[in-house]
Amino acid sequence: MQEFQSFTRILFTPLVVWGMVVGASQLEGFCGGGQWEDSIYAKVTNPTLSPSHLKDLPGFTRSVYERNYALITPESQVFSALPDWINTSGAYLITPAMGSHFVMYLAHMEENATSVLPQQDIERFLFVIEGEVVLSTGADVIKLPVDSFAYAPPNLKHSVKSDISATLVVFERRYQRLRNEDPQFITGSTDKQVLLETPGEVFALRKLLPTTSMYDFNIHIMDFQPGEYLNVKEVHYNQHGLLLLEGQGLYRLGNDWHPVQAGDAVWMAPFVPQWYAALGKTRTRYLLYKDVNRNPLDYTY
Image (cartoon, rainbow, N blue to C red):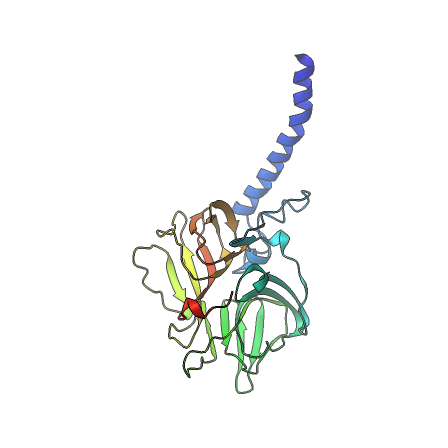
């Protein structure tokens, strides 16, 4: 018996100590200040949990890829040079290889970085997470700081440049024209968008693009206070691409439950059950792609 007790002490004591260290560091990340605290979306690229506290644990990741959803967390995001962009590395988070009809990627632009045009008939939406960029269309030159966005309709000649380092989240997809309507070039910022009614729900909702039929997708900014959650357990034909900008919570995807935090990206295929609850002591804010205004028969998967 004494030999068994000695063995269990030898086996479990290091695990307990390791758990205390990791637990303490996680609490420090949630409650303490830091060098990134003054940046509005700093936790997207500098999360307080993984990978900073668990990056040295071999094989650890919260990322999951399933047939009808994917969770891509910061420790799994692989950056490489974006094709033809200058001084820019990117991480593709959602692509048609998953089954989506759009792409979503992060673009880390260094000093003196420049974008490249998307392919023919491809529309582009970009949202600034860190730093500042300058968007030029020939007719317009517009500064886009953090929390600003731009929509470039298909075949619009434009460029994005950065004098300082900046991080963007970018969505691109092949435009589905309806009748003879053409979408317009749009820029704006989140705080200038009106709060919309959400009957039966408690979250705050802003839509960054017009809701007219000339636009075949929209981008939503959704805010949840701690303890708030979706009332509807959603199952629908729309696809989603999501990036958590602030906070933490619990996401149901299919029959699985995942803790999520700022910096996590999620793809949701058509008809996957989905639900979210905000946890912690600060609000959750996430940016959500949603295809709209088109007959599902017209989509190519």
